[in-house]
Image (cartoon, rainbow, N blue to C red; front, side, top):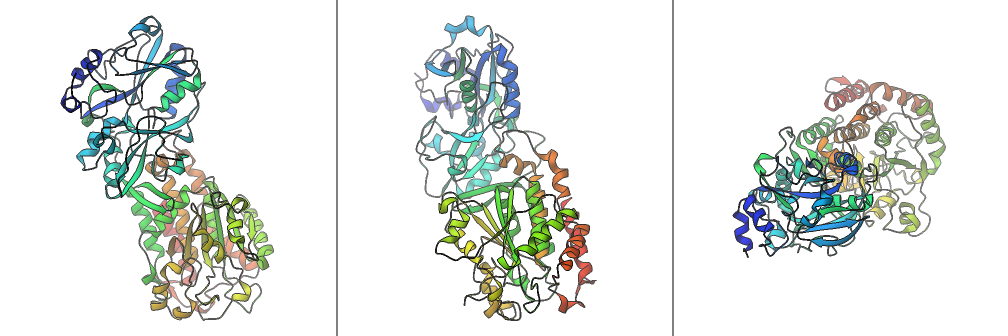
Length: 616
């Protein structure tokens, strides 16, 4: 018998020879022939071969096809010399009508049946482990001499013919400060699953307990490690089960076919984009991926809207990358609740201002175009007016689809959680993300103030309670967009508001959001969010991460997404609609103010043009 340590440095042909002679005591090939690629194996009757190949192409993350054999072919010339698929995996599985019946150390006894079968060689994550290690990233399963942990998920693959199953993933615990290195190492290796499909809490994938693997071994997670999940070729086994073929074979999980192809030969030469890892939630833990190029463009959007046209001191409130993190979180969300409404004209009916609704509707339009559920919650006294604004916006082409309107009065204990969650169950939130834009925010004394310290509490429903309650509901993130520090969600920067903004000690909002986007005008912040969402969803790295590397890219929908973006024409129409409903500008006292040499109102059009220049 041969010791494991010596197998690490042996050439693939030598290891395959030892496996063929049954001289290796272990079945897990992780770490063997370090620096060479390994492959998952699926063997099916020739009548199923075309559908399975199409299934692989439709789910290329878990099933990157390296080679499809001819019917009855036992060798694989592109991947190895002098190999025999009947003998060169340490352990195989036999399936009959979709049922796993036994494990085998050789398929030579089925040589007659194999003459009518086709072998598929699929990329394996063992192939990238040495590349990861070269960047100083520990591979815990190798350290612990265990098979990698594998889990069935609740994520459905794109079905083809008789093949229909859920994604299977591998999990490797990675130290938090090594996440970027792990992603950088694996991103170019598309033939071997590429970059991770999920980083963070396993619950997002429908995995309940990391201690209960479906395949492989449980790997100990060290303090400071983050669970990182890659698409896994064992998805092919689940596909075999689903098709219920009378006879099929696969490798046994972890018992791979070792090829003669070096890791260094496999990076995708077309992979030019560099991925960036961004944490967007701590409870539950969630990271996202975006290309460095798109991240820089979103940072430019943040810089463009972060000017201070009124010299109110808001530049001191800016937090770098809040727009990036907020838009990433919104991109992951399925259901979003938006709130707006600042009754600054308290002696006028209606008391609302024009800042807020345009930005809210711009975000709603883009979110809807991306396929997300969107609703708006506002004050009960203004619900009829907002219904008419939405109806007019659809008629004028500003919106394509109606946005449901809700109200919240906060009349009973715990009603905020009941509003946010199904049957008041914190484990079943109705919304993934709450966004406040130019929404009156509650100060530390419980009142609501405009910039002049006028108390507006009698005009405001306690929608702040929803943001407070969301802090205790895992899975709901929040964003506040403001331009003065007295808006809902800007409690995150309240100390800066008190120090730098006039009347800040009194007016500062006390209610924080997870992300606070500060803009010279709140509408601009909403427009920037819409543009950032477009950029993210046209980013191949982010798109792949969102769909877990299954199915096909959604980039063909970019024209629909682009049509949903804010524009000068849309803003002009919407402002006209708001004025028709008696809503006044919030800057009527600053008509002479200039922004970058432009009259204030012209600056709005210029701002939209600048944002679109960065975006499109």
